[in-house]
Image (cartoon, rainbow over all chains, first blue to last red; front, side, top):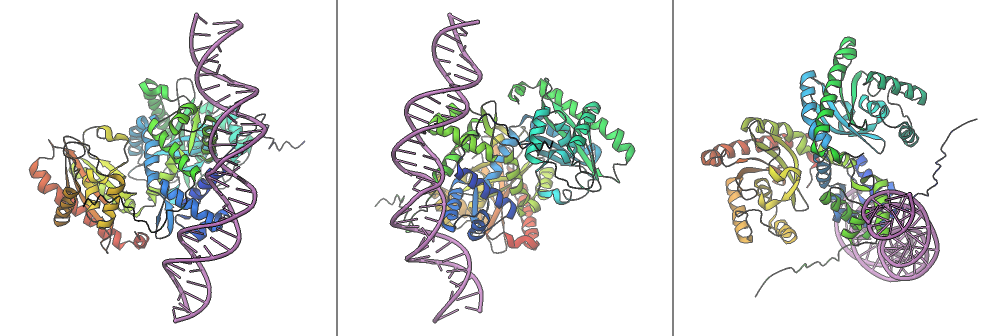
Length: 274
Length: 274
DNA sequence: ATGAAAGTTTGCATATGACAAATAAAACCC
DNA sequence: GGGTTTTATTTGTCATATGCAAACTTTCAT
Protein backbone atom coordinates (compact mmCIF):
# COMPACT_ATOMS: atom_id res chain seq x y z
CA UNK A 1 0.00 0.00 0.00
CA UNK A 2 2.80 2.36 -0.78
CA UNK A 3 1.36 5.67 -1.81
CA UNK A 4 4.58 7.12 -3.14
CA UNK A 5 2.42 9.40 -5.14
CA UNK A 6 4.58 10.90 -7.83
CA UNK A 7 1.30 10.48 -9.61
CA UNK A 8 1.33 13.84 -11.38
CA UNK A 9 -2.29 13.34 -12.22
CA UNK A 10 -2.33 16.06 -14.83
CA UNK A 11 -5.42 15.75 -16.88
CA UNK A 12 -4.00 18.69 -18.75
CA UNK A 13 -0.86 17.87 -20.63
CA UNK A 14 2.05 20.10 -19.73
CA UNK A 15 2.33 22.98 -22.16
CA UNK A 16 5.18 23.00 -24.62
CA UNK A 17 8.37 24.58 -23.47
CA UNK A 18 11.18 26.06 -25.45
CA UNK A 19 14.41 24.18 -25.10
CA UNK A 20 16.36 27.30 -25.83
CA UNK A 21 14.83 29.04 -22.84
CA UNK A 22 15.48 26.11 -20.54
CA UNK A 23 19.07 25.88 -21.67
CA UNK A 24 19.62 29.60 -21.32
CA UNK A 25 18.38 29.59 -17.78
CA UNK A 26 20.50 26.54 -17.06
CA UNK A 27 23.51 28.57 -18.06
CA UNK A 28 22.39 31.51 -15.96
CA UNK A 29 21.93 29.30 -12.92
CA UNK A 30 25.24 27.64 -13.57
CA UNK A 31 26.92 31.02 -13.57
CA UNK A 32 25.35 31.77 -10.22
CA UNK A 33 26.86 28.54 -8.98
CA UNK A 34 30.30 28.98 -10.47
CA UNK A 35 30.36 32.75 -10.16
CA UNK A 36 32.39 33.00 -13.33
CA UNK A 37 33.36 30.50 -15.96
CA UNK A 38 34.79 30.18 -19.44
CA UNK A 39 33.26 28.73 -22.55
CA UNK A 40 34.77 25.27 -22.29
CA UNK A 41 33.87 24.87 -18.65
CA UNK A 42 30.30 25.96 -19.27
CA UNK A 43 29.94 23.66 -22.27
CA UNK A 44 31.07 20.75 -20.13
CA UNK A 45 28.63 21.50 -17.38
CA UNK A 46 25.57 21.87 -19.57
CA UNK A 47 26.49 19.06 -21.96
CA UNK A 48 26.37 21.03 -25.14
CA UNK A 49 28.92 21.29 -27.85
CA UNK A 50 31.35 24.15 -27.60
CA UNK A 51 30.01 25.79 -30.69
CA UNK A 52 26.44 25.67 -29.47
CA UNK A 53 27.41 26.93 -26.06
CA UNK A 54 29.29 29.72 -27.74
CA UNK A 55 26.17 30.85 -29.52
CA UNK A 56 24.20 30.77 -26.27
CA UNK A 57 26.77 32.80 -24.43
CA UNK A 58 26.97 35.40 -27.15
CA UNK A 59 23.20 35.66 -27.27
CA UNK A 60 22.84 35.99 -23.55
CA UNK A 61 25.59 38.55 -23.48
CA UNK A 62 24.07 40.61 -26.24
CA UNK A 63 20.72 40.50 -24.49
CA UNK A 64 22.30 41.75 -21.31
CA UNK A 65 21.70 38.81 -19.02
CA UNK A 66 25.32 37.84 -18.69
CA UNK A 67 28.53 39.68 -19.25
CA UNK A 68 32.01 38.78 -20.24
CA UNK A 69 35.41 39.95 -19.15
CA UNK A 70 38.24 38.36 -21.06
CA UNK A 71 36.42 35.16 -21.84
CA UNK A 72 35.10 34.81 -18.34
CA UNK A 73 31.35 34.92 -18.25
CA UNK A 74 29.24 35.89 -15.27
CA UNK A 75 25.84 37.29 -14.43
CA UNK A 76 25.31 40.77 -15.73
CA UNK A 77 24.92 43.77 -13.49
CA UNK A 78 21.66 44.17 -15.32
CA UNK A 79 20.30 41.55 -12.98
CA UNK A 80 20.39 44.31 -10.40
CA UNK A 81 18.05 46.29 -12.57
CA UNK A 82 15.54 43.46 -12.78
CA UNK A 83 15.90 42.60 -9.11
CA UNK A 84 15.64 46.22 -8.07
CA UNK A 85 12.55 46.62 -10.16
CA UNK A 86 10.88 43.65 -8.55
CA UNK A 87 11.74 44.85 -5.09
CA UNK A 88 10.73 48.45 -5.60
CA UNK A 89 7.41 47.48 -7.05
CA UNK A 90 6.52 45.10 -4.32
CA UNK A 91 4.04 46.60 -1.93
CA UNK A 92 5.20 44.35 0.87
CA UNK A 93 8.66 45.82 0.51
CA UNK A 94 7.41 49.35 0.32
CA UNK A 95 5.34 49.03 3.44
CA UNK A 96 7.38 46.46 5.29
CA UNK A 97 10.87 47.90 4.93
CA UNK A 98 10.61 50.62 7.59
CA UNK A 99 9.01 48.16 9.99
CA UNK A 100 11.73 45.60 9.44
CA UNK A 101 14.34 48.28 9.99
CA UNK A 102 12.67 49.26 13.21
CA UNK A 103 12.42 45.66 14.32
CA UNK A 104 16.10 45.05 13.67
CA UNK A 105 16.98 48.15 15.61
CA UNK A 106 14.70 47.26 18.48
CA UNK A 107 15.94 43.70 18.84
CA UNK A 108 19.49 44.43 17.81
CA UNK A 109 19.33 41.33 15.61
CA UNK A 110 18.58 40.30 12.04
CA UNK A 111 15.12 40.79 10.69
CA UNK A 112 13.89 39.45 7.37
CA UNK A 113 10.98 40.05 5.05
CA UNK A 114 10.14 36.99 2.99
CA UNK A 115 7.82 36.08 0.14
CA UNK A 116 7.06 32.75 -1.46
CA UNK A 117 7.53 31.95 -5.08
CA UNK A 118 7.77 28.64 -6.89
CA UNK A 119 7.61 26.97 -3.51
CA UNK A 120 10.66 28.67 -2.09
CA UNK A 121 11.12 31.52 0.30
CA UNK A 122 12.72 34.57 -1.20
CA UNK A 123 14.30 37.27 0.87
CA UNK A 124 12.68 40.52 -0.04
CA UNK A 125 14.61 42.54 2.48
CA UNK A 126 16.79 42.11 5.48
CA UNK A 127 17.97 44.48 8.16
CA UNK A 128 20.78 43.95 10.60
CA UNK A 129 20.61 45.16 14.18
CA UNK A 130 23.56 46.60 16.06
CA UNK A 131 24.33 43.46 18.02
CA UNK A 132 23.81 40.98 15.23
CA UNK A 133 26.77 38.72 14.72
CA UNK A 134 28.40 37.73 11.47
CA UNK A 135 28.70 39.93 8.45
CA UNK A 136 25.56 38.32 7.19
CA UNK A 137 25.29 35.25 9.14
CA UNK A 138 27.56 32.51 7.98
CA UNK A 139 27.08 30.81 4.69
CA UNK A 140 23.69 32.36 4.26
CA UNK A 141 25.56 35.33 2.94
CA UNK A 142 24.89 34.79 -0.69
CA UNK A 143 21.63 33.12 -0.23
CA UNK A 144 18.50 34.93 -1.16
CA UNK A 145 16.31 31.90 -1.33
CA UNK A 146 15.61 28.92 0.85
CA UNK A 147 13.28 26.00 1.36
CA UNK A 148 10.20 27.00 3.26
CA UNK A 149 10.22 24.22 5.83
CA UNK A 150 13.57 25.10 7.33
CA UNK A 151 12.99 28.69 8.37
CA UNK A 152 10.59 30.41 10.73
CA UNK A 153 9.44 32.77 8.02
CA UNK A 154 8.99 29.88 5.60
CA UNK A 155 6.94 27.83 8.01
CA UNK A 156 4.81 30.85 8.80
CA UNK A 157 4.02 31.03 5.11
CA UNK A 158 3.37 27.31 4.70
CA UNK A 159 0.99 27.36 7.62
CA UNK A 160 -1.32 29.75 5.81
CA UNK A 161 -1.05 28.41 2.31
CA UNK A 162 -3.87 26.12 1.13
CA UNK A 163 -3.02 22.57 2.13
CA UNK A 164 -3.23 21.47 -1.46
CA UNK A 165 -0.56 23.97 -2.37
CA UNK A 166 1.63 22.83 0.49
CA UNK A 167 1.45 19.27 -0.79
CA UNK A 168 2.34 20.45 -4.24
CA UNK A 169 5.37 22.25 -2.87
CA UNK A 170 6.44 19.23 -0.88
CA UNK A 171 6.15 17.10 -3.98
CA UNK A 172 8.36 19.48 -5.88
CA UNK A 173 11.02 20.19 -3.30
CA UNK A 174 10.75 17.45 -0.70
CA UNK A 175 11.99 18.06 2.82
CA UNK A 176 15.76 18.25 2.60
CA UNK A 177 17.44 18.62 5.94
CA UNK A 178 19.94 21.22 6.97
CA UNK A 179 20.63 20.35 10.59
CA UNK A 180 19.69 17.68 13.10
CA UNK A 181 16.58 19.65 13.94
CA UNK A 182 15.21 20.18 10.46
CA UNK A 183 11.74 18.73 10.00
CA UNK A 184 12.04 16.01 7.40
CA UNK A 185 8.80 14.14 7.94
CA UNK A 186 5.57 15.16 6.27
CA UNK A 187 3.27 14.34 9.15
CA UNK A 188 5.52 16.10 11.58
CA UNK A 189 5.48 19.14 9.36
CA UNK A 190 1.72 19.18 9.09
CA UNK A 191 1.44 18.97 12.87
CA UNK A 192 3.88 21.82 13.17
CA UNK A 193 1.81 23.87 10.74
CA UNK A 194 -1.26 23.20 12.89
CA UNK A 195 0.62 24.48 15.93
CA UNK A 196 1.71 27.55 14.04
CA UNK A 197 -1.83 28.38 13.06
CA UNK A 198 -2.92 27.94 16.65
CA UNK A 199 -0.18 30.21 17.98
CA UNK A 200 -0.20 32.62 15.07
CA UNK A 201 3.56 32.48 14.59
CA UNK A 202 6.40 30.03 13.94
CA UNK A 203 9.55 29.02 15.74
CA UNK A 204 12.76 27.85 14.17
CA UNK A 205 14.94 26.23 16.77
CA UNK A 206 18.23 25.35 15.07
CA UNK A 207 16.38 23.87 12.13
CA UNK A 208 18.22 25.95 9.59
CA UNK A 209 21.56 26.71 11.21
CA UNK A 210 22.98 25.12 14.31
CA UNK A 211 23.00 27.53 17.20
CA UNK A 212 20.48 29.83 15.57
CA UNK A 213 16.90 30.49 16.50
CA UNK A 214 14.22 32.54 14.83
CA UNK A 215 10.62 33.58 15.20
CA UNK A 216 8.44 34.25 12.16
CA UNK A 217 4.94 35.57 11.65
CA UNK A 218 2.69 35.56 8.59
CA UNK A 219 1.54 38.66 6.78
CA UNK A 220 -1.89 38.22 5.25
CA UNK A 221 -4.38 40.34 3.39
CA UNK A 222 -7.93 40.97 4.50
CA UNK A 223 -9.13 37.76 2.90
CA UNK A 224 -6.61 35.75 4.82
CA UNK A 225 -4.44 35.13 1.78
CA UNK A 226 -0.81 34.89 2.71
CA UNK A 227 1.36 37.67 1.27
CA UNK A 228 4.62 36.84 2.94
CA UNK A 229 6.15 36.77 6.38
CA UNK A 230 8.78 38.32 8.56
CA UNK A 231 11.20 36.96 11.09
CA UNK A 232 13.83 37.84 13.62
CA UNK A 233 16.79 35.57 14.17
CA UNK A 234 19.74 35.35 16.53
CA UNK A 235 22.13 32.91 18.16
CA UNK A 236 20.73 30.82 21.00
CA UNK A 237 22.97 32.62 23.44
CA UNK A 238 21.02 35.76 22.72
CA UNK A 239 17.57 34.26 22.26
CA UNK A 240 17.47 32.47 25.59
CA UNK A 241 14.23 30.70 26.39
CA UNK A 242 12.31 33.53 28.05
CA UNK A 243 13.08 35.89 25.28
CA UNK A 244 12.63 33.36 22.52
CA UNK A 245 9.31 32.03 23.73
CA UNK A 246 7.61 35.20 24.91
CA UNK A 247 9.19 38.50 24.22
CA UNK A 248 10.23 38.07 20.62
CA UNK A 249 7.01 36.42 19.38
CA UNK A 250 4.94 39.26 20.76
CA UNK A 251 7.14 41.77 19.01
CA UNK A 252 7.18 39.91 15.72
CA UNK A 253 3.45 39.30 15.63
CA UNK A 254 2.87 42.89 16.47
CA UNK A 255 4.95 44.15 13.58
CA UNK A 256 3.28 41.66 11.26
CA UNK A 257 -0.07 43.11 12.27
CA UNK A 258 1.08 46.63 11.66
CA UNK A 259 2.23 45.71 8.18
CA UNK A 260 -1.04 43.93 7.49
CA UNK A 261 -3.06 46.95 8.50
CA UNK A 262 -0.97 49.28 6.41
CA UNK A 263 -1.19 47.07 3.38
CA UNK A 264 -4.90 46.65 3.64
CA UNK A 265 -5.32 50.39 3.97
CA UNK A 266 -3.09 51.05 1.01
CA UNK A 267 -4.72 52.08 -2.22
CA UNK A 268 -2.39 49.67 -3.97
CA UNK A 269 -3.70 46.74 -2.04
CA UNK A 270 -5.80 45.74 -5.01
CA UNK A 271 -2.57 44.87 -6.77
CA UNK A 272 -1.92 41.93 -4.54
CA UNK A 273 -4.27 39.57 -6.12
CA UNK A 274 -2.53 36.40 -5.25
CA UNK B 1 33.56 65.42 -46.05
CA UNK B 2 30.97 64.30 -43.60
CA UNK B 3 32.38 61.66 -41.36
CA UNK B 4 29.10 60.54 -39.92
CA UNK B 5 30.81 57.33 -39.13
CA UNK B 6 28.12 54.77 -38.47
CA UNK B 7 30.72 52.78 -40.28
CA UNK B 8 30.57 49.70 -38.03
CA UNK B 9 33.83 48.61 -39.50
CA UNK B 10 33.56 45.11 -38.14
CA UNK B 11 36.06 42.96 -39.83
CA UNK B 12 34.64 40.25 -37.65
CA UNK B 13 31.11 39.32 -38.55
CA UNK B 14 28.75 39.47 -35.61
CA UNK B 15 28.35 36.07 -34.04
CA UNK B 16 25.10 34.22 -34.44
CA UNK B 17 22.47 34.94 -31.91
CA UNK B 18 19.54 32.85 -30.86
CA UNK B 19 16.23 34.37 -31.78
CA UNK B 20 14.58 32.60 -28.92
CA UNK B 21 16.88 34.31 -26.45
CA UNK B 22 16.34 37.72 -27.97
CA UNK B 23 12.60 37.28 -27.92
CA UNK B 24 12.61 36.00 -24.38
CA UNK B 25 14.51 39.00 -23.15
CA UNK B 26 12.22 41.26 -25.14
CA UNK B 27 9.35 39.83 -23.16
CA UNK B 28 11.21 40.27 -19.89
CA UNK B 29 11.99 43.87 -20.69
CA UNK B 30 8.45 44.46 -21.78
CA UNK B 31 7.23 43.18 -18.44
CA UNK B 32 9.52 45.62 -16.70
CA UNK B 33 7.90 48.34 -18.75
CA UNK B 34 4.31 47.27 -18.30
CA UNK B 35 4.78 45.87 -14.81
CA UNK B 36 2.21 43.20 -15.50
CA UNK B 37 0.43 42.09 -18.63
CA UNK B 38 -1.69 39.33 -20.06
CA UNK B 39 -1.00 37.01 -22.94
CA UNK B 40 -2.84 38.97 -25.61
CA UNK B 41 -1.29 42.26 -24.63
CA UNK B 42 2.19 40.78 -24.64
CA UNK B 43 1.68 39.09 -27.98
CA UNK B 44 0.62 42.42 -29.47
CA UNK B 45 3.66 44.23 -28.12
CA UNK B 46 6.22 41.74 -29.32
CA UNK B 47 4.53 40.99 -32.62
CA UNK B 48 4.27 37.28 -32.23
CA UNK B 49 1.28 35.05 -32.65
CA UNK B 50 -0.66 34.35 -29.51
CA UNK B 51 0.20 30.69 -29.58
CA UNK B 52 3.91 31.37 -29.88
CA UNK B 53 3.79 33.96 -27.14
CA UNK B 54 1.95 31.47 -25.01
CA UNK B 55 4.77 29.00 -25.35
CA UNK B 56 7.31 31.66 -24.46
CA UNK B 57 5.43 32.72 -21.37
CA UNK B 58 5.02 29.17 -20.14
CA UNK B 59 8.68 28.47 -20.72
CA UNK B 60 9.82 31.60 -18.96
CA UNK B 61 7.47 30.88 -16.11
CA UNK B 62 8.67 27.32 -15.73
CA UNK B 63 12.26 28.50 -15.76
CA UNK B 64 11.50 30.97 -13.03
CA UNK B 65 12.18 34.24 -14.81
CA UNK B 66 8.61 35.41 -14.82
CA UNK B 67 5.58 34.48 -12.78
CA UNK B 68 1.89 34.47 -13.33
CA UNK B 69 -1.06 35.37 -11.16
CA UNK B 70 -4.37 34.75 -12.80
CA UNK B 71 -3.14 35.23 -16.32
CA UNK B 72 -1.20 38.31 -15.43
CA UNK B 73 2.48 37.86 -16.05
CA UNK B 74 5.23 39.79 -14.35
CA UNK B 75 8.89 39.50 -13.44
CA UNK B 76 9.57 36.75 -11.00
CA UNK B 77 10.77 37.35 -7.47
CA UNK B 78 13.62 35.14 -8.53
CA UNK B 79 15.09 38.20 -10.14
CA UNK B 80 15.87 39.27 -6.61
CA UNK B 81 17.96 36.17 -6.22
CA UNK B 82 20.00 36.94 -9.31
CA UNK B 83 20.27 40.60 -8.47
CA UNK B 84 21.18 39.88 -4.88
CA UNK B 85 23.82 37.48 -6.03
CA UNK B 86 25.39 40.02 -8.32
CA UNK B 87 25.41 42.66 -5.64
CA UNK B 88 26.74 40.48 -2.86
CA UNK B 89 29.55 39.22 -5.00
CA UNK B 90 30.65 42.58 -6.16
CA UNK B 91 33.75 43.72 -4.38
CA UNK B 92 32.89 47.35 -4.96
CA UNK B 93 29.66 46.81 -3.10
CA UNK B 94 31.29 44.90 -0.31
CA UNK B 95 33.89 47.54 0.28
CA UNK B 96 31.95 50.59 -0.81
CA UNK B 97 28.67 50.07 1.04
CA UNK B 98 29.81 51.16 4.50
CA UNK B 99 31.53 54.18 3.01
CA UNK B 100 28.45 55.18 1.08
CA UNK B 101 26.38 54.79 4.21
CA UNK B 102 28.78 57.01 6.09
CA UNK B 103 28.77 59.57 3.31
CA UNK B 104 24.99 59.72 3.28
CA UNK B 105 24.93 60.16 7.01
CA UNK B 106 27.61 62.82 6.94
CA UNK B 107 26.01 64.88 4.20
CA UNK B 108 22.45 64.07 5.15
CA UNK B 109 21.75 63.49 1.46
CA UNK B 110 21.63 60.70 -1.10
CA UNK B 111 24.77 58.86 -1.95
CA UNK B 112 25.13 56.35 -4.77
CA UNK B 113 27.56 53.68 -5.82
CA UNK B 114 27.56 53.13 -9.55
CA UNK B 115 29.10 50.73 -12.04
CA UNK B 116 29.09 50.71 -15.80
CA UNK B 117 27.80 47.90 -17.93
CA UNK B 118 26.78 47.82 -21.55
CA UNK B 119 27.38 51.55 -21.66
CA UNK B 120 24.94 52.41 -18.92
CA UNK B 121 25.34 53.32 -15.31
CA UNK B 122 23.89 50.81 -12.91
CA UNK B 123 23.12 51.64 -9.33
CA UNK B 124 24.96 49.18 -7.18
CA UNK B 125 23.86 50.74 -3.95
CA UNK B 126 22.29 53.88 -2.62
CA UNK B 127 21.97 55.31 0.84
CA UNK B 128 19.68 58.06 1.98
CA UNK B 129 20.71 60.67 4.51
CA UNK B 130 18.43 62.06 7.18
CA UNK B 131 17.69 65.29 5.39
CA UNK B 132 17.30 63.86 1.92
CA UNK B 133 14.02 64.79 0.32
CA UNK B 134 11.65 62.56 -1.58
CA UNK B 135 11.09 58.94 -0.85
CA UNK B 136 13.66 58.17 -3.48
CA UNK B 137 13.93 61.24 -5.42
CA UNK B 138 11.14 61.76 -7.86
CA UNK B 139 10.71 59.59 -10.88
CA UNK B 140 14.07 58.03 -10.33
CA UNK B 141 12.36 55.80 -7.89
CA UNK B 142 12.20 52.72 -9.99
CA UNK B 143 15.26 53.44 -11.93
CA UNK B 144 18.33 51.40 -11.39
CA UNK B 145 20.03 52.33 -14.59
CA UNK B 146 20.75 55.50 -16.46
CA UNK B 147 22.73 56.96 -19.31
CA UNK B 148 26.22 57.83 -18.27
CA UNK B 149 26.35 61.35 -19.66
CA UNK B 150 23.52 62.71 -17.55
CA UNK B 151 24.77 61.96 -14.06
CA UNK B 152 27.80 62.98 -12.05
CA UNK B 153 28.68 59.39 -11.34
CA UNK B 154 28.25 58.48 -14.99
CA UNK B 155 30.45 61.29 -16.23
CA UNK B 156 33.07 60.37 -13.66
CA UNK B 157 33.14 56.93 -15.21
CA UNK B 158 33.17 58.14 -18.81
CA UNK B 159 36.09 60.41 -18.04
CA UNK B 160 38.29 57.47 -17.16
CA UNK B 161 37.13 54.99 -19.76
CA UNK B 162 39.35 54.63 -22.86
CA UNK B 163 38.25 57.21 -25.41
CA UNK B 164 37.58 54.47 -27.92
CA UNK B 165 35.13 52.88 -25.52
CA UNK B 166 33.42 56.20 -24.88
CA UNK B 167 32.87 56.63 -28.62
CA UNK B 168 31.48 53.15 -28.83
CA UNK B 169 29.05 53.93 -26.03
CA UNK B 170 28.00 57.17 -27.66
CA UNK B 171 27.39 55.33 -30.89
CA UNK B 172 25.17 52.86 -29.12
CA UNK B 173 23.21 55.14 -26.87
CA UNK B 174 23.62 58.64 -28.26
CA UNK B 175 23.21 61.65 -26.00
CA UNK B 176 19.54 61.82 -25.14
CA UNK B 177 18.61 64.83 -23.06
CA UNK B 178 16.74 64.88 -19.82
CA UNK B 179 16.68 68.55 -18.92
CA UNK B 180 17.73 71.85 -20.44
CA UNK B 181 21.17 71.35 -19.00
CA UNK B 182 21.90 67.86 -20.26
CA UNK B 183 24.97 67.69 -22.45
CA UNK B 184 23.80 66.65 -25.89
CA UNK B 185 26.80 67.55 -27.97
CA UNK B 186 29.73 65.22 -28.44
CA UNK B 187 32.45 67.86 -28.45
CA UNK B 188 30.99 69.50 -25.42
CA UNK B 189 30.97 66.18 -23.65
CA UNK B 190 34.59 65.46 -24.51
CA UNK B 191 35.58 68.88 -23.19
CA UNK B 192 33.66 68.16 -20.04
CA UNK B 193 35.45 64.85 -19.66
CA UNK B 194 38.78 66.68 -19.99
CA UNK B 195 37.72 69.01 -17.21
CA UNK B 196 36.69 66.12 -15.04
CA UNK B 197 40.05 64.43 -15.46
CA UNK B 198 41.77 67.69 -14.58
CA UNK B 199 39.68 68.18 -11.44
CA UNK B 200 39.43 64.53 -10.52
CA UNK B 201 35.66 64.62 -10.06
CA UNK B 202 32.46 65.46 -11.91
CA UNK B 203 29.62 67.92 -11.41
CA UNK B 204 26.05 67.44 -12.43
CA UNK B 205 24.23 70.73 -12.34
CA UNK B 206 20.58 70.01 -13.12
CA UNK B 207 21.58 67.85 -16.05
CA UNK B 208 19.56 64.91 -14.88
CA UNK B 209 16.75 66.39 -12.84
CA UNK B 210 15.77 70.01 -12.64
CA UNK B 211 16.66 71.50 -9.31
CA UNK B 212 19.10 68.74 -8.49
CA UNK B 213 22.85 68.85 -8.25
CA UNK B 214 25.39 66.11 -7.70
CA UNK B 215 29.09 65.52 -7.38
CA UNK B 216 30.67 62.27 -8.50
CA UNK B 217 34.14 60.79 -8.28
CA UNK B 218 35.72 57.82 -10.04
CA UNK B 219 36.90 54.69 -8.29
CA UNK B 220 39.86 53.10 -10.01
CA UNK B 221 42.16 50.20 -9.44
CA UNK B 222 45.92 50.48 -9.15
CA UNK B 223 46.33 50.35 -12.91
CA UNK B 224 44.00 53.25 -13.35
CA UNK B 225 41.19 51.10 -14.73
CA UNK B 226 37.84 52.49 -13.80
CA UNK B 227 35.82 50.23 -11.51
CA UNK B 228 32.88 52.49 -10.86
CA UNK B 229 32.08 55.75 -9.17
CA UNK B 230 30.18 57.30 -6.35
CA UNK B 231 28.15 60.45 -5.98
CA UNK B 232 26.22 62.61 -3.59
CA UNK B 233 23.16 64.49 -4.75
CA UNK B 234 20.75 67.03 -3.34
CA UNK B 235 18.44 69.86 -4.34
CA UNK B 236 20.08 73.15 -5.29
CA UNK B 237 18.65 74.77 -2.21
CA UNK B 238 20.82 72.49 -0.14
CA UNK B 239 23.86 72.33 -2.38
CA UNK B 240 24.40 76.06 -2.59
CA UNK B 241 27.44 77.17 -4.50
CA UNK B 242 30.01 77.15 -1.70
CA UNK B 243 29.04 73.73 -0.60
CA UNK B 244 28.58 72.35 -4.09
CA UNK B 245 31.86 73.64 -5.46
CA UNK B 246 34.18 73.05 -2.52
CA UNK B 247 32.95 71.16 0.46
CA UNK B 248 31.16 68.27 -1.22
CA UNK B 249 33.80 67.52 -3.85
CA UNK B 250 36.47 67.23 -1.21
CA UNK B 251 34.33 64.83 0.75
CA UNK B 252 33.38 62.76 -2.27
CA UNK B 253 36.89 62.49 -3.62
CA UNK B 254 38.10 61.55 -0.21
CA UNK B 255 35.67 58.68 0.13
CA UNK B 256 36.49 57.52 -3.40
CA UNK B 257 40.13 57.37 -2.39
CA UNK B 258 39.37 55.39 0.72
CA UNK B 259 37.44 52.86 -1.31
CA UNK B 260 40.24 52.65 -3.85
CA UNK B 261 42.79 51.95 -1.17
CA UNK B 262 40.64 49.30 0.45
CA UNK B 263 39.98 47.58 -2.83
CA UNK B 264 43.58 47.54 -3.83
CA UNK B 265 44.54 46.11 -0.48
CA UNK B 266 41.87 43.46 -0.70
CA UNK B 267 42.91 39.94 -1.51
CA UNK B 268 39.99 39.76 -3.86
CA UNK B 269 41.26 42.64 -5.91
CA UNK B 270 42.55 40.20 -8.50
CA UNK B 271 38.95 39.45 -9.35
CA UNK B 272 38.41 42.80 -10.87
CA UNK B 273 40.11 42.19 -14.08
CA UNK B 274 38.17 44.57 -16.19
C1' DA C 1 59.46 28.46 -31.75
C1' DT C 2 56.36 24.86 -31.47
C1' DG C 3 52.56 22.45 -29.90
C1' DA C 4 48.47 22.26 -27.28
C1' DA C 5 44.40 24.28 -25.62
C1' DA C 6 40.76 27.54 -25.98
C1' DG C 7 37.82 30.35 -28.71
C1' DT C 8 35.45 31.45 -33.23
C1' DT C 9 33.33 30.68 -37.75
C1' DT C 10 30.79 28.08 -41.27
C1' DG C 11 27.88 24.36 -43.81
C1' DC C 12 24.64 21.29 -43.34
C1' DA C 13 20.84 18.13 -41.35
C1' DT C 14 17.18 17.92 -38.44
C1' DA C 15 14.96 18.90 -34.33
C1' DT C 16 12.54 22.83 -32.77
C1' DG C 17 9.92 26.68 -32.79
C1' DA C 18 6.19 29.57 -35.32
C1' DC C 19 1.82 29.84 -36.96
C1' DA C 20 -3.01 28.88 -38.01
C1' DA C 21 -6.85 26.73 -36.93
C1' DA C 22 -9.51 24.25 -33.61
C1' DT C 23 -11.00 23.82 -28.90
C1' DA C 24 -11.90 25.29 -24.29
C1' DA C 25 -12.66 28.56 -20.89
C1' DA C 26 -13.66 32.99 -19.17
C1' DA C 27 -15.74 37.49 -19.36
C1' DC C 28 -19.30 40.28 -20.90
C1' DC C 29 -23.85 41.89 -21.60
C1' DC C 30 -28.62 42.45 -22.56
C1' DG D 1 -29.23 33.15 -17.59
C1' DG D 2 -28.20 32.13 -22.09
C1' DG D 3 -25.95 33.74 -25.86
C1' DT D 4 -21.94 36.36 -27.58
C1' DT D 5 -17.50 37.97 -27.56
C1' DT D 6 -13.05 37.86 -25.90
C1' DT D 7 -9.12 35.39 -24.02
C1' DA D 8 -6.50 31.37 -23.15
C1' DT D 9 -4.94 26.66 -24.44
C1' DT D 10 -3.97 22.71 -27.45
C1' DT D 11 -2.52 20.46 -31.66
C1' DG D 12 -0.82 19.48 -36.65
C1' DT D 13 2.07 21.01 -39.89
C1' DC D 14 5.80 23.38 -42.24
C1' DA D 15 9.78 26.31 -42.45
C1' DT D 16 13.69 27.55 -40.29
C1' DA D 17 16.41 28.38 -36.33
C1' DT D 18 19.28 25.71 -33.74
C1' DG D 19 22.88 22.10 -32.89
C1' DC D 20 26.81 19.79 -34.24
C1' DA D 21 31.12 18.70 -36.49
C1' DA D 22 34.86 20.16 -38.68
C1' DA D 23 37.80 23.87 -40.14
C1' DC D 24 40.02 27.80 -38.73
C1' DT D 25 42.10 31.30 -35.62
C1' DT D 26 43.86 32.94 -31.58
C1' DT D 27 45.89 32.45 -27.10
C1' DC D 28 48.68 30.21 -23.83
C1' DA D 29 52.48 27.29 -22.29
C1' DT D 30 56.76 25.40 -22.64
